[in-house]
Length: 311
Ligand SMILES: Nc1ncnc2c1ncn2[C@@H]1O[C@H](COP(=O)(O)OP(=O)(O)OP(=O)(O)O)[C@@H](O)[C@H]1O
Ligand SMILES: [Mg+2]
View 1 (cartoon, helix red, strand yellow):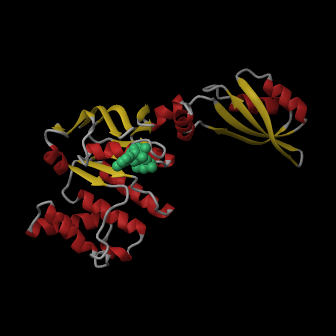
View 2 (cartoon, helix red, strand yellow):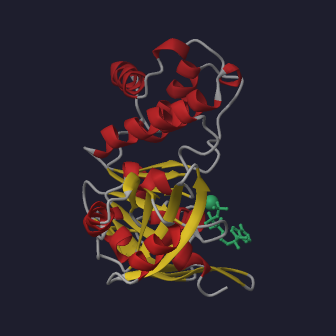
């Protein structure tokens, strides 16, 4: 569906995108994850024919960004970083204006607008001027205008940035729903967003792809093992020495001590899953167990490892 081959984009001496290649299959929601200045927006701008790359190329549904840039613009819907809207237009007039530019007329135009109002839940605000709308609703109007021509591919640059938690959940739900029929690339800094919304992730840092895979695959790749939080009532030093002598335990750290209960953080080798062994240790020694909680490595760990390694 989307094939990106060796794209390089420079701005003067800055190499914003440094030899990126990847593919997106039909029906994928690809999360583009990276810190500030990683090159996410630049890559999206290349794919939407906003500007050409210095070298490399990309095809979207078989259309080449150099040779078929008009067709690319036809089949792609783009929501830029801050959705540019005409604030003094009301929602329905704005959507009409965009639909007009996209070549819709008469009843077909009205049908598309109705569909977008429906899909993006804009019923409540259709008659309002855009400047009166909350950020979340503006973002929905942006999405509606990006999708008005029913594109097969949607490129969304930080679609939930600046929204409150309720609006974030709503927009994510909407993207997931849309993703059932379209191929989507979205960029974000927000890690839970990727786990919640995306079927695949590319982590990009300093213009390069540093990891790719499903959110699960990337989480499993995280080094550093597992953390188990353990609360025990019993003799502190004995507990500590027995835990540290267990196989696969890397470190035991006392977090706090309250009312004879000692809370430990037990770090173990990845994949060792010592929760059950810790439970048996406590039981066999007749101590009391007050807490046993395993914290899986998460996407955040992977992201931090991959984007802070070199610096
Ligand atoms: N039009 C431009 N002119 C000059 N430099 C640019 C331009 N656009 C981007 N850059 C530079 O390219 C690099 C990548 O920027 P880009 O906007 O792609 O990052 P990003 O991953 O989208 O970051 P953010 O998360 O902050 O949106 C940055 O160093 C940026 O300063
Ligand atoms: Mg950006």
